[in-house]
Image (tube, rainbow, N blue to C red):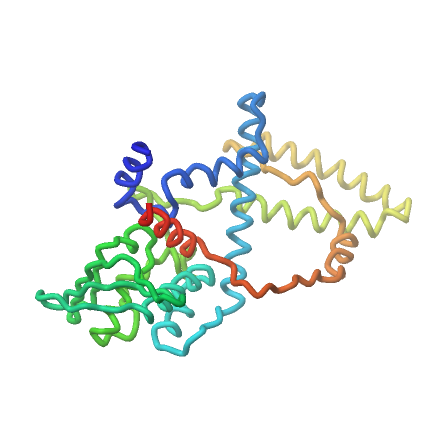
Amino acid sequence: MVKEKWAECYMKDVFALGMRSTQLSESLNSELKRHFKSDFDIIRFLKHFERVVEDKRKKELDAEFESRKKIPRTKMKTPILIQTSKLYTPIIFEAFQGEYERSMVACTTALEGINEYLVAIGSLDENFTFEKEYKVTGDPLEQTSTCSCGQFGRTGILCGHALKVLDLTNIKSLPGQYILKRWTREARSGTVYDNQGRNIVENPRLNDMLRYKDLTRKFLNLALRVASHPRCTLLVNNTLDSLSKQVDEELNASTGTMDPVTVPTNVTSPSEVITARLKKKEVQTKTSKRKKSWLDKMHKDTKKGSKK
């Protein structure tokens, strides 16, 4: 119990995507356990670690594709929700929209200071109970709203307390300083530098993989065309033997070192790809319950901690 309290105090001002201290390592550990074994040597460890990284990159690309393909559904037609639905990714917008809904059932008490309030979020149960009060300071000129709960510093999303005060000060759109680029649809655009000012390459082998995929497609198409014709097959084999010798000479003459390309082992033929695309899409049954986001789970954990 003492260690947990110490960890919470230590992580209070650390940006950790809303995860608790123990969750920071559990998420990556679960991914690594899927690919690793305790008896791996360093070579096998690095090979499987690259597989984990590739899997993470694929999930990131899929999420970016989904965010660019569709705009999330807004439950209310308000200026701030319309604005953020076009800026945020679907998952982050869902979390922000949840905080906005919480701000609609918040009650405020004005303090003696200028634009200082005590804000408490109300629940929609039969007893209509209130959560813990937090002090919020707003500045209409600077368009700021600072809450003592510190959620924006931990998750990068304004809490319902701060959104309530923004509305009280007649600020109907989200100020630019509260829109973090990492949560927007354009998070992957632009140039990223390290602490020494050097350009960070997102995936140094991306161009190699793109060239590999293009060549693989051409070779597979050629093999499918000539496989049933012996004379054409002999022509392709002789040409490839001659081409292989020329490539070896070019590689030996090259002064620079070339990193090996990590190629996939399960290469499918174009006919198999076409068949896979024609498969019937599985229909997922919708449930009446809304799937809880990571921000909802964080609020649930906070409520449990306050009851203790």
